[in-house]
Image 1: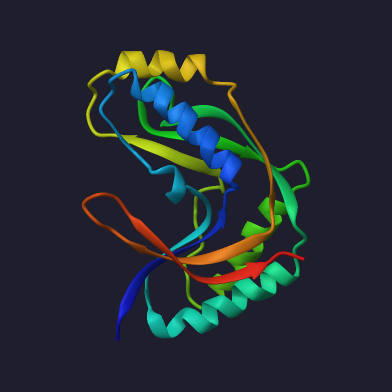
Image 2: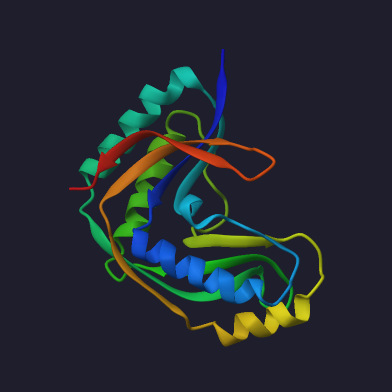
Length: 188
């Protein structure tokens, strides 16, 4: 039985990816020791599934289809720059997302609930929608990065229409993860 690493996500618009690359380039000039995520690989993860048997793809896809059918497309704002666990001790650099309609949270919760009915563990942490831009490899240049995060804290990446949900395969490679769409479902 073959396994694949997988997750469910919303893809970003090309304009948002351009803005992400713009802010990454500004932060790269700070010479902090960060592994940057390629802008084309950045997405809004709704549920990380981990390693699954390939045979489960149709079952998982059917759940995504049902949740997508029950959900209308919606606008997502991408704004603000911050870090986990916090801006003073950054480990992961991220951009925040906002959905004034509440549709994103409802969609994520529906996926969480339906996937739990087929054996996937419910995430204990509250859903915190964000886009991972980079991860610190070492504390080198942390002070400059902290200042950079403060300077771009209120950066506006833009707004885009979330129109579909995708199941992705993730292959970890030395040069970074490679993501392949397995299934895509349009929001109503």
